Each structure stands twice: as C-alpha cells, then as structure tokens.
Image 1 (spheres, helix red, strand yellow):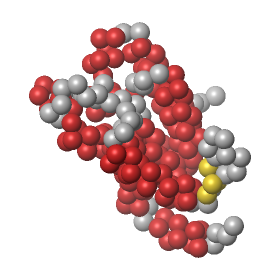
Image 2 (image 1 turned 120 degrees about the vertical axis):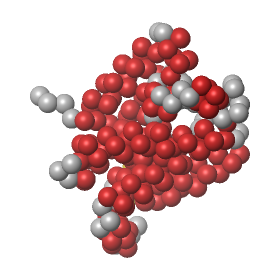
Image 3 (image 1 turned 90 degrees about the vertical axis):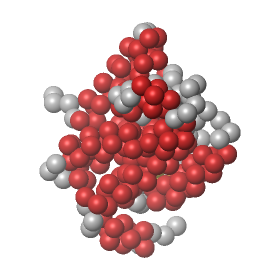
Length: 204
C-alpha cells in the first residue's frame, strides 16, 4: 500500500520528536529560539521546531488533528493536492513563527516548539473548503460546524496571545490559522463563493 503525504509527515514528525527527546543537544538545537536565530543566523530553527514537541500529549494532539484534516485538504486542492498540502503545512510552520521571532528576538531564554502553526493552517484550509463539516472536540458529544468553531478559535487565540498567561504560543496558532485561510483563497479563489453559499445554507 502506498502511504499518502499526511502519513509521511506523521511518521517523520513522530520519529524526529522521539529522536530529539533522546538527544538533548539536538532537542536544544532544533527549538525555535528567536534570540539565537537573530544573533547566530540559525534559520533552520523555523523548520526544525515544527518537528519536535514538548511531550507525548503535545505530539499526539497535533498529529491527531493533522491525520484527520491533512489528506482531506490534499484532496480538496485537486491534482497538485499533495504538493500544495506540503507547502501549506511547512509554510504554516514558518510563517506562524515570524511574529514570535519579532516579539522575542532579544530575549535569550524564550523557546517555542511544535507543529501547531502548520496544523492550524491545514485545519483552517479544510474549513474554507468545507465549512459545515462538524468538528468534534473532547468532552463535547456534538460536532460543531467548522466555520463556527474556527471563528471561536481565532477569537480565543487572539485573546490568549494578548494575555500571555500561559506557556502556549497562541500567536503561532492564530497566525497559522490566518495563513491557512489566505493560502487557500489565493490558490483557489472560487472557494470564497462556495464558502459563503455553504454557510448561508446552514441552519440549526
């Protein structure tokens, strides 16, 4: 059986995270550290930080979301779907971290990691294509239409990013999601009309 693009990303990310957990020096070298990027030009960290995770739960939730949305996005994009999904995911990781880099480039001890920006880009691309698709989250027995959950997620990420009350990089979530929307609209402009038509037809 030929594995799809999403599966390969899952395998590479899981393998890289496990490797980094057992090689502390590599783990430190692959983190997103804006200060070291700024002072030492260690630009690879924009990519490598998306393939290492804090712990099993962090890795699980990111890969769980990618598993369910990644191949759908590749399908929606059509004949070049696999390449476009890879571009969306990798660019989502990099671009979502640029605001973090700018904000913390003079703070030596700040680190960030994980694929959340890329995953958010993929999830929100899927929402643009299929806004009524129900999304299930823990402890809620009913699926929430993607366009509603997406809007709530954007507001929450923006609010939490302003508060900076925890160690989660909410800015990466927010900018990854926005990038996913823009990437999809630019490459498939017709998706806007389809999105509006689908949302307009929705009822409780």
